[in-house]
Length: 205
Image (cartoon, rainbow, N blue to C red; front, side):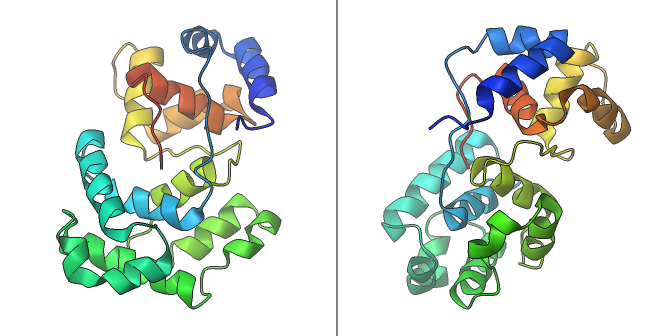
């Protein structure tokens, strides 16, 4: 289902940023879709850390076939050896299991996230091993559909901004934040379209 704010965000972005308007026109019939379950989104983000999209997809497919259902209890029951066999590194196995335990024992309070702002959710999640700010931001975008997330450390976003706004020159965090001011309060939407400018197939977490 399309986020309820999507069409309004596109109109606002098109008025405030001509580069973004041109990018959005190239992808008229695609939009962000929530992956729904936060545990699944976080695990998929961990799987994708520091490897290519193609490699991450291959590992994710093996992971999904081993677990059958992506739940904290299923991950804990699978145990480290079966998770290693999916192609996860030992460190990522530790991260997935620590995340599953945080969900299982209530240290991660997903049921309260609707009443929390983005920074409060990020603060809760970075307490879990292997979850840094970027991973928490992927949850905010792909699971919770928060509209104004700017993942400044995302390499794809940096590359897309470099190509679309700076003629291939490098982009610093300060430059990225300056450019993104025109996108507020829809920075998640702008980020998603910039990802599309690099890869027409929507990324899923």
